[in-house]
Image (tube, rainbow, N blue to C red; front, side):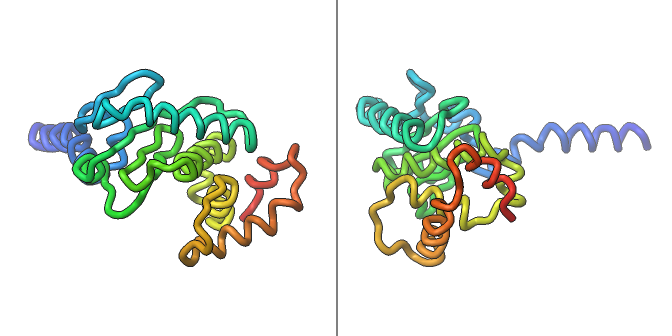
Length: 191
């Protein structure tokens, strides 16, 4: 009886990475080459190398913007740029322009190749560095997480769809009340 149970446990554990890879596509940011993109200089992965200069400029602008206006990054994350819908589907996009995966990386789909989208996701990366990914996910109010990203990325869309516009407005009202030196500690204490 012991042998079949051990075999079952080992088979289950060995299949788990494959199941996660197939079911939770954002995890692919950890090994994007296995999802069909090429990784190049500066921790950038892309499905179309002819657009490398464009994505380098977009990444560099977002890093410069966020660090000069919001805060220094501990680490610039991996960026995965999908120019095609096929690539976007591989990374789990339905209609999203971009998303971040904790502090592991940022994935930008075909609709997200604009400065405000790259900045927005990099702001989320900075939030995860400063607040902690698990803390931000479990305890930090959504109005702060999303409102900050939409506001400070200078997203030009006015108004945003609801509830995004409400969250941005709430952050814009809250933001001036916090001293810059206390910003991250105050943010971490929000509930």
